[in-house]
Figure 1: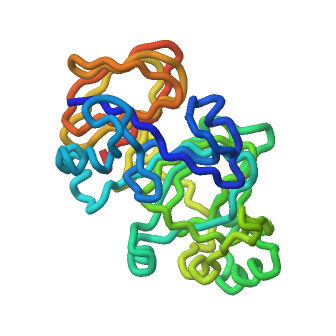
Figure 2: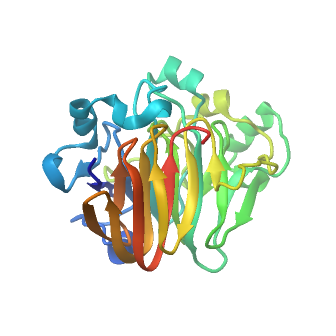
Length: 311
């Protein structure tokens, strides 16, 4: 079965920078480059296949043509493609935001909610992010602090460093702050409720929309959990299992799930059967379920491997 190399969909949100273009070889002709959607079947930004018989087609079109069996037995449990993987360059602070649960999102947005995880690729000295609350507060206090611009006083500001991992279930208030480069693995959803955006305006000169009633309805106003046990994985949930891989390695893509490889460093080759492709930092690769044994060989290689389900 083929190894698919994916071209990402790119986003020029106002808080982005240029590191994804300069360091990860992402091609994009607009500035800034805030996000690259490295593995996506979402209609707001689908990935496009760069090689082979399906070159120029979206990943969604490939799955439609080949059949949903390429997702694997765990992938088939989901009505839609289950995950979305991004690279995010926070040159400036992102908005303070929250994502809804599946139940709320399906009722109000007609798509999935969002549980996600962050893998910190790099962070400037002193960089931090917001991750839940310092202590539990009431819904009334939450609403009042949004109204009087004191919300950040009760948020959990966490210093970050390269290699840190954060698991962010739906309902967790959060924000990536300036000076941080992140790989994000999430449910296949684009539902975000902004709570606070520092008074910024969009390209149209108007303040960016906030979603206060929705945020009040879905936010867990409490500190985040710190007792997760992912069984040796970076993160594990019903939607995704993520591992960090370093150096050359051998692996098997079995019938349970497709395999996504996001190359975070180095250069080399990937081989599956009789097919070999060159790889470098910034590449996103998709191996269909049941592709069998594959190898990654090269210098200075590091990657994130994502599969579906609690594998």
